[in-house]
Every structure is written in structure tokens, then in C-alpha cells.
Length: 353
Image (cartoon, rainbow, N blue to C red):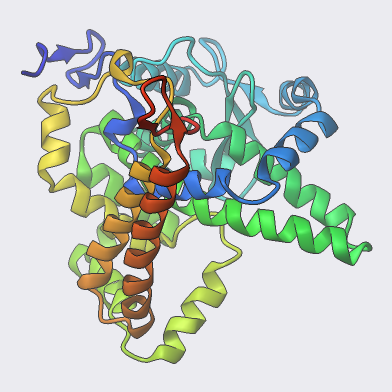
């Protein structure tokens, strides 16, 4: 039975004491991360990249070139920062910096002590409640441990640019960057859910996505027509359009604004979201130290298959059968080669997502 619902003392919003990131993580996010960790050479690349850069230096650069949010600097943002951390039960509260940048963006970086960076473009465009959603989204990255891989992605992209004169090295890095981008697009869907848990208002989340997509005044955007765009994008029936979609999305680290808006609104209407609000969600103290790689892969494949079954995109219908075959093969391989316990039975294991 759900524990007694905790309500934040500073707001009327529900506080999710001890919530596990698995409560909101998209199954494809966990599956993509499991695949990423199995990517040939991934562990070696992560170790090498970590040695090339100093996280302390990155924090010092943020300290020297941006405004650190606090009680006397952007106090309204500091209040949002603390309330979002309280809602998701994150302690210590990550630092938040505001950097001069006209682009509407926010990011969480750092491996040992993740911190959040918010651009002036986002601060100037969004109101208090949409900023709550954005900051809550970034808190989701912190709680899920995404900052490690996001930091790696940023560093690899910078390294790729500096090594463009060595074709072999550049191609190797490009492959890892492509794998990281694929995972991060899925991680963004997870953290949109975390942002919604902090906001607890689907209309606010939708307003944030409309602003991100190009809306100057959300009141002048027809919600039905906006979400219909996502339906039209997903329902293409020409395989040429399918390949074009893959081509343009490959290099993106974020999912398309209209599509992600529709994805989140679908989750906001689900029983899963309502159960979390009612206090029925997995707790961190119930998480095991390791998670089953095969379970994450199967869960991701099921999510893909469910979405493919409702799509008229001809390319996704082909991938549906492929995904089902891969998930079945993954389970068989894992069962055969999983580690053995003292009784000789197979155990599943892997890196925690």
C-alpha cells in the first residue's frame, strides 16, 4: 500500500520522499543506456575522457563566467531550485548557474558534483512555473545519474572537433557520440516526466514545450493544432520521409519539441502518473545495487513495439519485428552467459541505470 502522501511545507505540491528514478524513467531510456554500456570500447572511452578533463576546472569556469543562483542572486530561481530538490528528495541541492546565452537551454553537467546551467534566453522567455518545470527536468538528470554521460557527450564532441584532422580517430569518436545522442534523446523523455512531477501541472509542462518550439505567446497557440503536428509527424506513410526523419534526428541530443510535448501529455494522462501522485512509487531504499540488463532491454523493446504498433510509419513497422527479435535474443544470451551463483543457477546483473 502507498505510504502516507507527503505534502511540501513550502507549497501545496506532493513531495516524493525517497523516490527512485525508476518511478519516472522511460523504459527506452533504461534500455538505451544498457545498450550504450554494452557498446564496444565504451568503458575504455569513458575512463580516458574522464582523465583528459578536470571537472574541478569546469566548475571553476562556471563560477568565473556565470551567476551562481542563491538567496541574494536570482532569489526567485533559488527558491525554485530548492523546491524542486525538495519535491524529488534530492540532497544536497545541486548548484544552479545562469549563463549569458540567447538560446533557450538548460543542462546538467559534472560527474562527481553535478550542477545545473540555465541560459538567460530561458530565464527571459519563461515564467516562474515553466521555469519550475525546466529546473525540475534538470533535477531529474541529477537523480538519474545522467550527468555523467551528458558530460561525456559534451567532452567527446569537443574532442571530436579537435581531432577532425585524424580521420580514423574522428570516426571512432563519432560512433560513440552517435550512441550517446541516441540514449540522451530518450533520457530527455524521462526527465520531462521528472519536470512534470515537480510542476504537477500538465498545462505548465505543455506551455514550456510550446515556448521551446517557438511560441512567443502561448495563448496564441492552439493546443489541439499543436499536438496534431506530432500526430502528423508520427503518421507519415512514405518510406522516404521515414529515412529523412532518421537522417535529421541522428545528430540531435534532444527529441523534437512537438513530439516530446505529445509524449509527456500522454504520460500525464496515464495511471502510472496518477499512482505516483497518490504516493504509489518505487523508493530508492528498495532499489538493488545492480539492475538486470536483460530486463531493461526487454522493457525497452516492449515500449518500442507498443509505439510501433500504433504508427503508420513504414520504417518503424520494419523495426518492430527487428526489435522483438533482438529483445528475445538478448534474453537468451544473458540467460546463457549470466554469472553463476554457488548453486549453479544463472544470475542477472549489470550496471545500474
